[in-house]
Length: 350
Ligand code: EPU
Image (tube, rainbow, N blue to C red; front, side, top):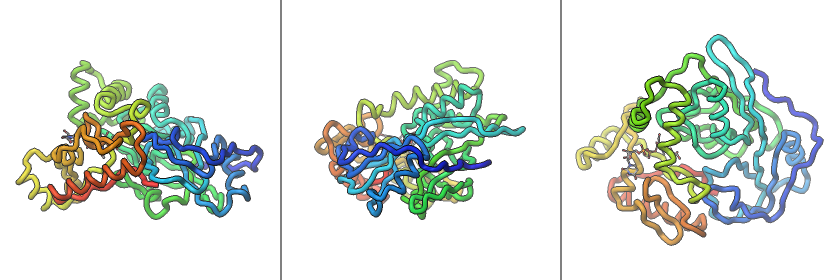
């Protein structure tokens, strides 16, 4: 599959100076960036990478800002990816290949694939953020991760402006992780992502809540639409809408621990949800651990723990990134003290 060709720079991007990032992160944290470039085309991206006024300053790639916690002002240039477009790029006997430009809303892209009659991404409905951000932490929900349908992505190396295609094996996808959070962190800007959507769908309804929701809705014939609708209903019930309450979804990853520690904990706490992993270790429900420490619905200043899901930290109004981080640290300390388990934050702190 051919990647995008880069055109010579023609148009100049809009670059704002000394701008608040509050509208650009779903926590609604108010920090200042020295510069903010709105990138609606590859052309504008090339122009900004070549702009002498912004050489030598730190750069930060920002999609929907739904997995980011700003704890201080950013002294450099924020590259806000606003590239739009989605298209079928190929088809073979087994699958269609659908490409989304990086600035597309993830949820809108998923709903578009479903409207085309394609399946594979339905369990990932209503996840906030953009198509371009989806591979960075290999977004996942209800038994599916994007790696399951990922074909390739095109990305620009910020240092050189070179376009590079990454295939599945290049991305080192793991639970809420990829090479773009690890060895290549901060080096690439994702331009587009291409998904391989199988013509013979394989439904993932094993997650208990999906089964219950489908039964309540009396769904007898599975379809991508029916599963997406069930997922949307569950998420609306359990997770706060960032447009109403600032949040970044799950604040912590579910910790994966050695089987021996999981067994010892289950002995002491038989209700602890623990899911065996292919490597023999166990994934524990961080939400349960936090809930057991009494944090659900509590707050420290303007930063709080969502009352319906202890894994989600919220901005109760006017919280700074430092307030949210302080709460996260207090939660980590109490979970460690009670269970001996280290929690790792999911959002990137900046
Ligand atoms: N639980 C509690 N109390 C809580 C929260 C959860 O006891 O306050 C228990 C639940 O009863 C359940 C278990 O913990 O037995 C797991 O909870 P849930 O099924 O709600 O899933 P989760 O582990 O909290 C993960 C993902 C979500 C994803 C859901 C569904 C992570 C870090 N989070 O949440 O992803 O939507 O599973 O697949 O893996 C996100 O990453 O932002 C996100 C929302």
